[in-house]
Image (cartoon, rainbow, N blue to C red):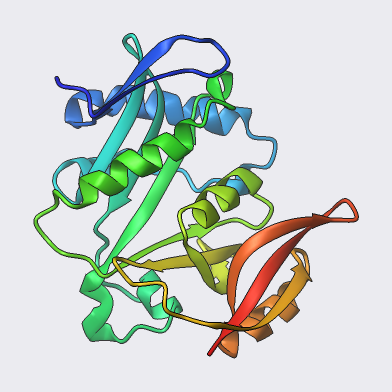
Length: 233
């Protein structure tokens, strides 16, 4: 199988390759996810997928790419074409029902605990967005959820130019930022106002988001994480 990308691990100075994943990799995928979940101190920061959810993506409802160190899967990332239902993220970011089929999700992204710090999440993000162009349908919006204080994932989304459009409880009672990026949208918006809000101040953040503000980045101030919000003209 031809590699989509070849790179070198920063820490180990070893070569790895990135490939498109298929049903042949399902056991490797589940094993990697189990390793990552077991290693997490706060299990609420990752919403793991069930086998049938991975199979749904791999059977044509999205795309998944993985980084391999020789034969070992050490990182993966997925895009999901979601079903239209009451939990659709498009509804959370203000789209109407007719626009929901224009949304694709950035789904789960995991990196083997032994190989963190090698920018694998960012590399796979670049590769999978290139693969988006090979899907049969066109999508206008990319959306995803991230847990507050999941700093690596938040940095990853902001680095891709995604913005926080909502903050609400998802997956039961778990608070999540809902990110969105409009595909191929020119950067024409002019920033009018800017505020920096503590990440643990959910009430203020929700109030801003409900009045049209967007979260565009993070700052570390006085040993606490903050979110940068802007209001566009």
